Length: 308
Image (tube, rainbow, N blue to C red; front, side, top):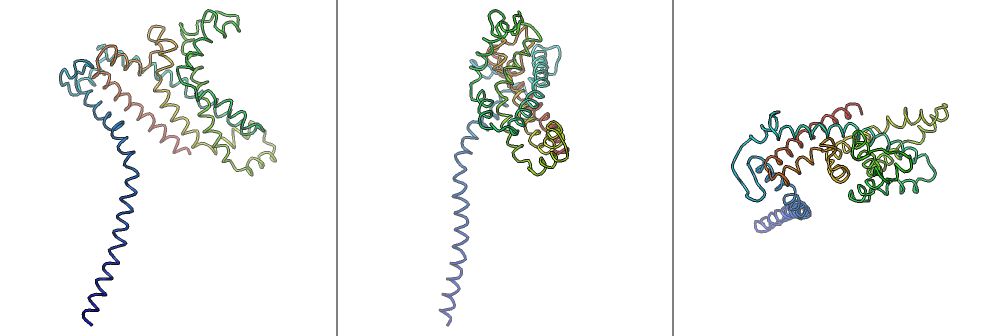
């Protein structure tokens, strides 16, 4: 009896261990599927973030390398209005904020309105394809096309208007040109997101509004928009982030001109790093810009979440 009891206990212990080991193996094997992403994240995001911050604490030249440790001196210089780097940083930030203030309302109003019109249209697939098509183009193709269209001499727009508008060389036309090109290029992406939100509207609510005599405009403003508010908040946040990263449109269409009036902060950072060879200062500008953008995005998220 004693031997059989020992065997029974050992068998029960063995049976209890097998499920535990099976659970551990399942968790470990599941983790293996995440390893490629973690490796790529560390290599292409984590390491550059840490290394870039280290560079921002040094006088760093792309050719000569480390020229001395400065600590937070690079950051302090950016807050000095009498320093050249500080003046360039805040001028670029002012231009960027101006562009964000102009572009984000347009990147919200136009796509949302068009998405609702397509949602109520019988030719949904056709219009979705037409408006989304520019999104698949590269920024180089878009800016080349719009630079050709908006040429002062011989441009398609000036020929059509029989005018001599300096679209790319004078203000406020330079900003208007960049906004038009960006809106045409990115409208389709925001439109698809807004359209997806409208497809989730309960048809009973739309039908009830129609029975009560509400017109299309009243239905859109008082019923459709309030119910897709989380979608509108998402579009606002991603449009703000993308607008803060304005670079190629200004570089390829206006070269930052006239003067430096369309030179965004990203272009200032690029010029500091690769033309001025001040990699440490450029890295400090990048991290300060990232901090400002994170604060703005957090405030937007909190405001829209409280109202949702």
